[in-house]
Length: 346
Image 1: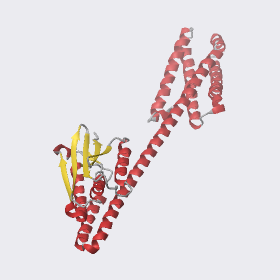
Image 2: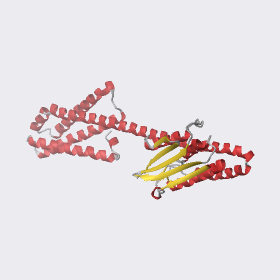
Image 3: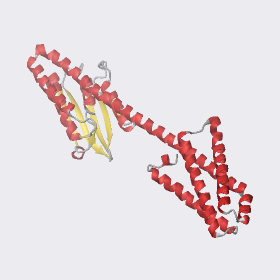
Image 4: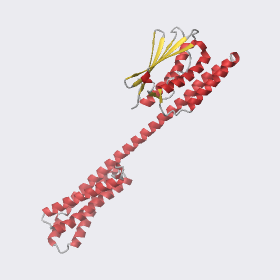
């Protein structure tokens, strides 16, 4: 159990051996204090230290395979006491055999037999309780690590699912437009197919685990807008207002595109005149702020749909940062504004 508390098992061995040395020195000092000669005291303390180290090792190995719980907690007392009794008996018999002619020393051993058993027994009980506590802490740590790993895997799986949903969502909208154009404007339909192919080829090759610069993200947005302009022609006007220092700031790939698609959907559907959508990007403290503004007619019913754009971005932000305050939206004077905040990783 002690070995589980350290990444290097050899470290726990050195700790046990160090405790044995301290036990030896303490025993030796006490024996000398009570008038035992140094030659006998060394042997006595050495044997006493060895049975102590052996007991710690046995308890550690035993409870490493078997952790008592409930009614079996009594093993924390019974096992150390039984071992200590056997160890002290062995200690007494061995020293009695070595110093069989030293009657005064043998009398000393007999008089302190119960005292030694008590000292060793209490110490081994403490070791057993400590070993159990270490084991419980390690089990809790392992459970927590497993839960963290499962949460990370679950988060990655959901992020992957959101990314997989994003492409079909945009693709189906584009294919519907291409289908409508094939009869009335076949040349525009062909142009849109080619632009859609270039856009999808670029996004499929991207590593969605790596963040991209705002400048790179805007390049993909412009490819997306080229496709949308085929659908809406002169009615769609996009104005970019991007600060120089924000171009190098980073964000998860394809995070803005669903918001822009949402702005186009609510800005141009059911409206016949030209519509200007504004995209602002700037740095504020340690955040990249992206604002998307689109006009809307409050008297018209909102376009039907799943609301995938805003909800997908909000969910991605929560999975990445664990926060729900990074995406805001508001409607003031027929202008709908979405505010996206991206913390910059250090």
